[in-house]
Image 1 (tube, rainbow, N blue to C red):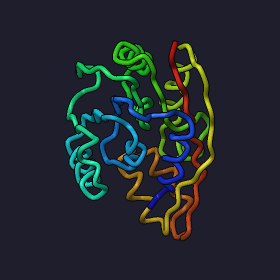
Image 2: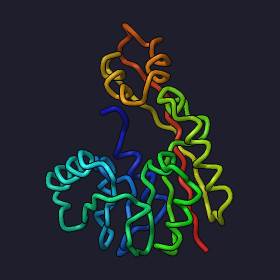
Image 3: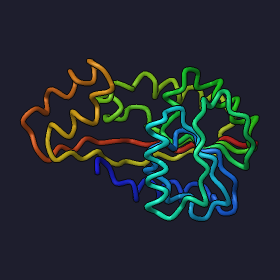
Length: 200
């Protein structure tokens, strides 16, 4: 496990009460945070990556949560859905236009929760995503934000190969940045996360 997902789920549940809510979960593919959904009424899990959706289905089956989640393979900007809350699960920074994504989310639900890397996160730097993360939070700050909170976590890797496998899809900049960890074991990289609630 690269990071402590149980702790991330606990942070999310402490921030927002999903009890009996219908949730549009954007970026749920992979299913690392599915445990938050146990008390929700229904989760419409939207992801545009077929492999991620397949991973989500496998995790849901293992966790006995198939009845709570409806995996939907779709582009968020094209999905026609309504719910009580939209959750961006470490996905807002991946949106081609974070501001437009938040605007669309507000038309889908009266509340929007963003859970993402925080500005200045060391992990976002090594993943070569610091500019995208900054753009996502700039878009958040232009909205009516009810509350925000920041948490500190970490990514842990037994060795350089594990780290390499985690970031190899991030491109050459990321691979160059992790060079300093070659030959090392027990690698710990701080990961700052942020939560924001956007609602009237």
